[in-house]
Amino acid sequence: MFAPVLPSNGVAGWRFLQQTYDAQLSAFSKSGAVQRSADYFTQNIAQISNAEDLVADRRLLEVTLGAFGLQDDLDNRYFIQKMLSEGTSSDDALANRFADPRYAEMASAFGFGPGEVRKNDLPGFASDLVARFEANAFEVATGAQDDTMRIGLYARRTLADLANGPGSNNTKWFSIMGQPPLRNLFEKALGLPTSFGQIDIDQQLSVFKDRAASVFGSDQVSQFSDPEKIDQAITRFMARAQLDTSATGTSSASIALTLLGG
Image (cartoon, rainbow, N blue to C red):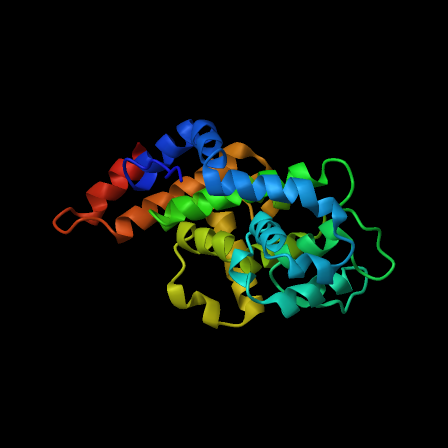
């Protein structure tokens, strides 16, 4: 399988990955295992009529979960079946009770719930999920070398959609807090301690908004519909992550000046 190329870490490595992303993703997607998974999904997903059938086919389930960044749930078949079969129409549906919005997004995408319209046989469904699966698989492969790069790629791919999506500002912050990659990015970019997640959830929300207003000039998640704002957030994250792992003997102050001024 094609291995992502990362010549360096930190901001410099992130800039290289951005510049070469399209070519690297294309090469990765054409590699054997990824291509076979994508082809199988494309050829078979329209034949699935319910959640039980989907979770019974491990190859289809692997692509499905990968498309939503939930690949770690591959062996939790009953949990995923219940998530999909309940759908999202009811407020008390399992997917709607999770802080992580990716579960509801997956359940909604298929439409297996009561009274919902099944969508997995619609034109474009397979190609859309395959593209998401390939992008996420590339992020996972990148994270095997440098997890900060995986988080940066995930934020670049998803943050604008969240910022432009429906819901109040608080709802969007809760969505960020519920997605581990985005939460990790904002905690580090805003200089929050690793123990921050242990405090009351409403206090966390208040701190996120206050810090965002101080660092980015606004507490509104909608500001991240601007690619420049996303780049600013990711660059701060990368710089702080590199400072955390900087070589002994180099002063933090000089590294910070180099990274944040470069």
